Length: 109
Length: 112
Image (tube, rainbow over all chains, first blue to last red; front, top):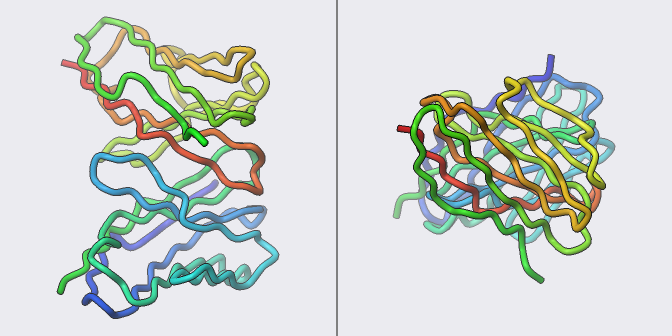
């Protein structure tokens, strides 16, 4: 079945890079997404990657996709305190999103 | 450009009651989907509508239903509420899968 897994917590120092990892099981996924959720808020789409791409860069965000290992990562360069949130990866091959458990990123000064 | 609007933001209901939540998608988006978020189960897909037709449905009991109107606005209904239905209900609209899904701020439902 479809399953998406993420580590639960990540703590980084302000100014360092953060790398959030995700693994998925559905080899027929077409798009993979990264969403950010701040307390009391909905989900904010950060970036996404098509399954035939290896990498996508968008300002401070870099997404790497290893389709063979079904591994997705999100790198945030120069992490700021405002980046503290829960980050969800999600995959789709139909008209629904399958979400990971979310990774809580804590940024300390 | 207005985002996805969900109303109400907060709702408190009693067990056994029913509730209707509303979602207005981004103008031009014809796909609307609903998700339930709880601490225990995470984010789970409820259903997806496109041009007033339900295209996909998650593994939820029949107490959960939805519909979409000709203007793409969508409602979801939960009947005979249970304590376990307490959750954040999120609506997302999409122009096309390749453009991603835009979420609203959600409706927080508390069942007492």
